[in-house]
Image (cartoon, rainbow, N blue to C red; front, side, top):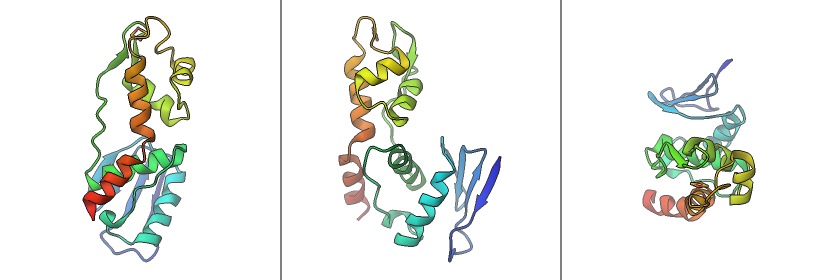
Length: 153
Ligand code: FES
């Protein structure tokens, strides 16, 4: 399913498109994103509140699913997305990938125990548990949003 959305009072060059829930295009820049339809409305709200300049948008804080995804999306659209976890596999005992763990965190697993329950990561030797905690901290930290705001000011 595809949908296209123009922001209200849009300037002609700024368009956001959602295609198959995984692509967002702004001003000719395509960003791969595990999006959801709710993000279209959140983007409209941000645009209405803060205008078309993405650098003027504050990064949303909070640990809700929507806040985490919107924070990621704004950072990607600004070219500021620098997610440090790119290893294919984080938990070698259980063969759990970084992507699987990140999806669990974004979906609401905000403790290592919750990540373990959802993914089986950290359920054998436990060596990967600190890395899982760092991934949780990274996704939930508001300091990232504040640092990015200072950088763009
Ligand atoms: S590396 Fe994850 S439990 Fe051993």
